[in-house]
Amino acid sequence: MRVEAIVEVRMTEDRGKVLKALENVFTPMRIEERQSDMGTILVATCEGHKCLEKLRSAIWRQGIQDAARSVISRGIVGEDTVVFSVNKQAAYVGVVSFVTEAGESPLGPITFTVKTNDVRQFIDWLAPRTYRGRVYYEAPPPD
Image: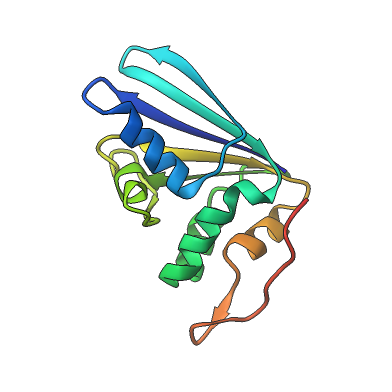
């Protein structure tokens, strides 16, 4: 599994705070900076499921597995790719809030692109189905 997280650091934002927001939900192996008209874009990448453990833990801690599953499932863009976004400001305080529409995150979202051999197993691992508030089936970590 390969994960890429992209987040924009606008000129009015503190780079350190944006980096903290990213690192509250993601553990990157490498971060690249690219310049854009609006500021800087941070592109963080990693291999394997361990880099998404913080995101998974936050989803479980907040008890939003079903909502997360619904949003992430709508982000399937191919046999091996899922794209979803979380609110940068919420991530800064360690909370996961999914962004489903443009403009929903005024300072821009953190956008994740996950490439995996088994999209369904990835979703079952990150945000499993629940029944009456309890996890129905917990999948093993994806490739």
